[in-house]
Length: 242
Image (cartoon, rainbow, N blue to C red; front, side):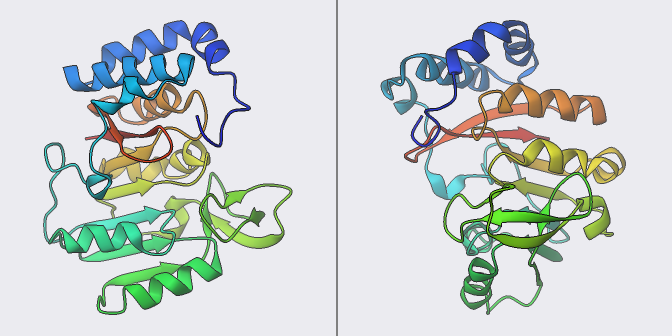
């Protein structure tokens, strides 16, 4: 997987075979199960042909219209808002929102997002990271793939979603470079009390897919899970919890 070649995917699959079998069984439709098998084959072989027949257009990423629908009173947390690309896709698809929280730790990126989304007046720009707890953390890179790391050269504020957003959330999107599990745990009250729709990236770490589902099942056993794949240089997979 481009950018993640230091991970031993085969070891992860072998060691966690039971977890992958459980994930396969819990997924909500045949397409999800077929995509999971294709992704596992790709991880073992790095042969992209296993993915080609399943990848969808990237414009639908996080908003698959066959899985998810939105009303006019959505309260959205866009974790990893980057330069506003996800928000632009959301609103260009004629979706509406009462409040849209764009959360991005890079000041450079969030300033670009403010310019690109200036026509919308219901977006709250939060220049911070999300995680399990409130803290000051180190953040590296202002471009694609910025990550919370002890080696980061910028200090940023980190908040749990439960702390940052008091309104009941209806939708959470996360693309935060491997911090998804910790951030989901930091949104435990939002998830337990409000059961927001979720679209969570599941490709930054080898075990993301089953770890995300296992984490969410402990918080809300009534979620139904779907697995989708999108065109990109990466194996860009998303777990939907609905």
